[in-house]
Length: 137
Image (tube, rainbow, N blue to C red):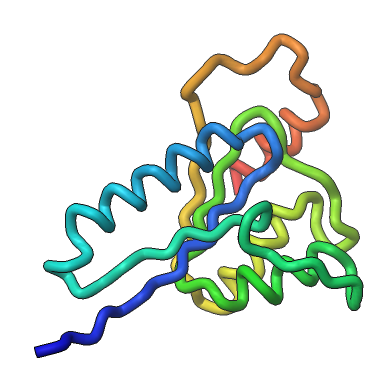
């Protein structure tokens, strides 16, 4: 008897400095799927704009990512470390815009702050201040 498998889309978000953390999250999701997806009839598909967004020049870059990734996601997972990110014209960073869009759409939104490694000595003070202010929000 065939069973229906539910697919949950988890969009992994974060500034460019969290590539290591994004990779770890992808590995954890893959391992969890291997261990548990059959028993739970549920599979989590991780997505990241670097690998899953398709080129499109019809709108601003972040709007395209929002439409392709955030709007289609069931879960939004945001990770920060030493950078808040790059302004989009709508928010102080793409990741902030993705978080806010997920919240507005009543999606499950999870925000994490990495402490895998100490902050780099070359950290941008402005980025750290923005990150600190957002973290207090």
